[in-house]
Image (tube, rainbow, N blue to C red):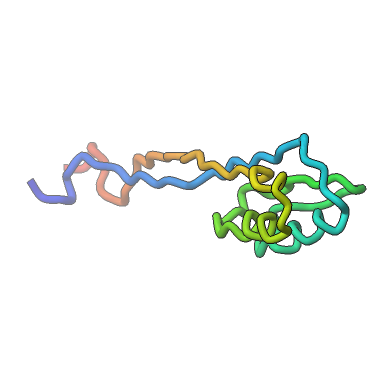
Length: 103
């Protein structure tokens, strides 16, 4: 069987970051801005003194936010950020080959 007629499809995956902040940890304003500014893709924002995750899909898993939190040398910041990954899998039916109706 020729590969052009092989019954396969294209599958892609995309990581979907899940970033959780520990709500029990209180940060000073300067700590919030230092952690926010450490992220190269601007995942975090500070709105009216509240530290928020605004663009989780832009996370590139570089770990700079965690390194910065640990560099602040505060023991209670160790588990402040938890970054997990969900995987989105998409199957595409069209691969550019002929349809079944074409011989």
